[in-house]
Amino acid sequence: MLDFLLKVDDLVWGVPLIVLIIACGVWLTYRIRLLQVFHLGKALRLMVKNEEGGHGEVTSFGALCTALSATIGTGNIVGVASAICAGGPGALFWMEVAAFFGMATKYAEGLLAIKYREIDADGHALGGPFYYIEKGMGKSWKWLASCFAAFGTIAGLMGIGTITQINGITTAAQNFFDPDAKHVVMTIGSGDGAAVITVTTVIAGLIVTVCAALVIIGGIKRIASVSQVVVPFMAVIYVLCGVLILLCNLPAIPGAFYQIIVGAFAPQAVAGGILGITIRTAIQKGVARGIFSNEAGLGSAPIAAAAAQTKDAVRQGLVTMTGTFIDTIVICTMTGLSIVITGAWRPELGLEGAQVTMYAFQKALPFPNQVCSFLLMMCLVFFAYTTILGWDYYSERCLEYLTKGDMKPVKIYRWLYIAAVFVGPYMTVKAVWTIADIFNGLMALPNIIALLALSGVVAKETSAYFEEKRYVKHLQ
Image (cartoon, rainbow, N blue to C red; front, side):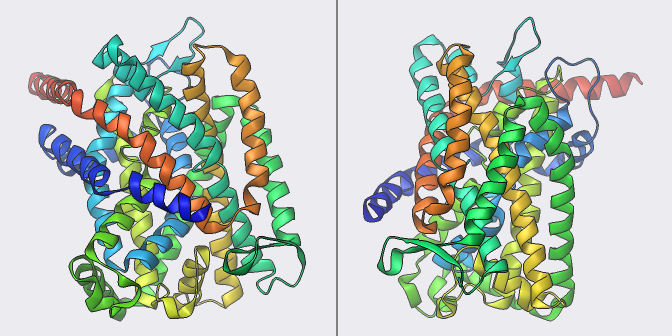
């Protein structure tokens, strides 16, 4: 089964899709005139300033935190580690390149989400790729909107939203509380692919499942209220750890950048030919894991953006764009540098997933190993927990579109989602990431097609917004 999944993953995340995603970001960057460079400061200011008089279910900041709750997850810890282990330090370079152009993509997603969303008489907002495909591209493309919604529903249930996140949490908990796996409950599988289930795994899985269920049942407003508290807190703690790692290892930073740049274009010069690491592998893993982490191009963030209380599509596009900056340019870079500085990615260490970042923290932070392990474990737990919440919202909205507003299937889906969280710890890490990768790619394709088709709308709305702002400023 794993061999089959790997073949499907290679097919989905082949060169064509990677080129398409990057090309979309490059094209949008051109159409909006490097907006992610020249207006990043404005976007960051708008991020924490809620708009008055807008329509929607949650504040603009609440919508961003809901989106960040889904994007800042195991991809920032486990995903970065997996990318560097598979593609060498150069994978981090390609992750950053993808993020830079991904900011333009995310901007366009947020803008289109507000422009084409629907708000009913009760104030319930629904929007995202399925609506900007159907309403922006025309009714004849509704089949593509349905494809996206179907892939999004499955992705939340089977990959990025549940299994991957809970697996990361329980693995981190086991590495901290029972690293030698002395208290084994059962073993799933055999040989190298066997998964050892400990008492810690079972307990951690149960606790997270219950905590997730308590919030998920409350819907978007409860998810947003929890996210607005947890997301800023966890991001600040993790960034502070990252800054401390860099300060404590200043002499090693130039060497790390050298490995990253050389590894991006000549991987074997850094890896010594081990594992057959090539430029294609570095690009493929860097882009795939980067998109898994910041979700630019997947079409997930605009589903949250559509719920924002705003009347200006461009404004929300700018706010949505900051999610990619915070997630990848800041947080993933911190993780990647710590892994490269300490050499935690090298295969001779035999580390996998969260163990790689755990090793890096232990080597680079000036604290006892137990303290470092605890800090990383808590960050991963919070990151993954909020991602579980955010992706439940995404997949429920996709299902709501498919059922044309019938909420009965959505309520059933919630319990299926909670059940998927419950069984997640009992799947192997490699299988989990492979499944998540596959559904990420399937989601991205319809969304990227829509973004390219509607790039003219994005450019027109952007130009009109900034011309109006300049005119108002001139009058003042």
